[in-house]
Length: 550
Ligand SMILES: Nc1ncnc2c1ncn2[C@@H]1O[C@H](COP(=O)(O)OP(=O)(O)OP(=O)(O)O)[C@@H](O)[C@H]1O
Image 1 (cartoon, rainbow, N blue to C red):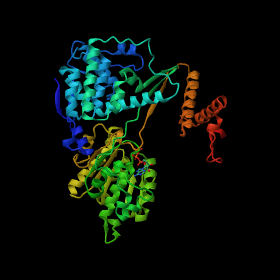
Image 2 (cartoon, protein in one colour):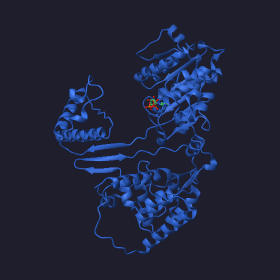
Image 3 (cartoon, rainbow, N blue to C red):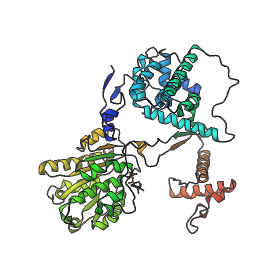
């Protein structure tokens, strides 16, 4: 049985990211609980193989729709969904025509509730659940469509570049009933748009493209001799919302500005969480992609705590302690350095307390911010005999809280539980700030940290990355060991050269010190053979090691 119920995560996300219920897209608050799923094994570049490897558990049953592979709602998922619909005869259009028509509807400027009708017209009532998915994942799909258009357009701009799709013979314009229907639909959409006087932009581009070229352009898998390359395109940056602005450092209190020397403004994520983090005592959980600037979020919460103890222009340092739990000793050392340096103008003493760095009793007393690891803080707080330290803790920052799901989870869980018990038994306030990478179950983690999801939960997906991230994965299938290493070095060399030619730098990580020497020798050898040595010269600093010194 299919159950539709309000999706708490979507609901929370819309609140979190600042869209009120009024702006919520139709269907965004509904979650699909799937019936028994069937698997779709997708091989991206080879059409024949796709046909062979796409398996359905029940071809006669049209009342189901494909689950996304690995949670990705991309053009491959759309093609599979259309395949199911076409096989179930609920659409007159052939699969790719249907997929393209859906792309055009999704890419239109209409709001969610309006496109629902258009989508149902296209796919038929029996594919209602697919329409739900299309609306819920509209942004992801539109992003890949735009990426495909971009790739196709840039291919066309390269002089002499060949079309990615082979062309077969002459085009014959014999139209079937379904093609006529598709043309009619396109004309209807065009007329509607013209009437509205809207810019046809991508829509025109989409009309002149075939779905197969679009899917190829946004293809994630390429097959080369001896290896495969999987490309994950970058997620488009979420546009600024109306009224959204970056908070300038000069707007902060004077003492807070001292900790942000060298910064001009908070970034988007920091600006979004600023009010709750700096002006309230709410527990917070921030889930954001790597490199999003979570250290500064911790800093804002530290500054809030400092602000609480600034009285008559004097910081009452003996009234409070801040504990920062970092997942590893090396990170604890780095955090200690950063905070120590940045909080020095406020006379704050920041010390590391880990297995490597012990603190004497008097050192602990004069420290305001303790940077520790989960295990160390667990040991310290377990000693109920010595509560003098923990009673002074007013702020507990837990970095990388997603490790709750890891081996270290039970330790983090224990220290959070102990903190919460202390809050209850002493009726004193200890604010908890959780920082994490993007978590799928952020609602549960928020609940565990006693974060009010309406106020203190902030979830930012990869569209909020300050620098969009494109990823390429290469899998070498060459079975012979030596040939594999040879090929690996060649691929590495080509990637490095591409990067340097584009004006970027490149960093190569290998497994061991020995491999470092070997790999750099190989890169130099290849640079000599290809007469690329100039590219590897370190023009900025001759004295430092360059690849050619190896
Ligand atoms: N407001 C800002 N303005 C300019 N640069 C910033 C700002 N905030 C952070 N950065 C820079 O962004 C980079 C990433 O920040 P940070 O290391 O805090 O990210 P993170 O989210 O903690 O990443 P990770 O998940 O890898 O730990 C750093 O180089 C930092 O100096």
